[in-house]
Length: 68
Image (tube, rainbow, N blue to C red; front, side, top):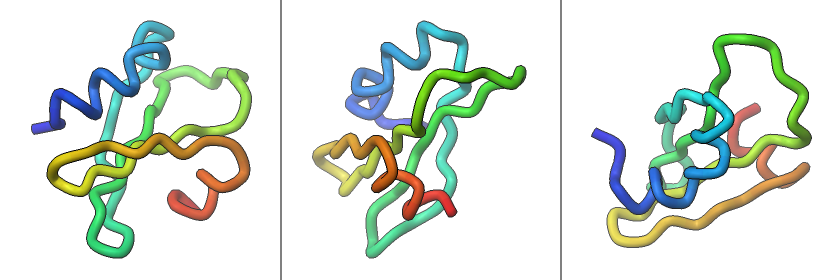
């Protein structure tokens, strides 16, 4: 189950039709990102790091390091 705070942080991307998905862990943090069924050009990726209490949004080139 995706935490409500992560869903709230991703609401703009979700409104574009993405599927919010957990893609792994990084230094003990759960890493979530938006995946689209269709190829979309919406700029650089955005990831949502969840520590169990708070969510941190990372975007741009830095986000690539979490999902590459």
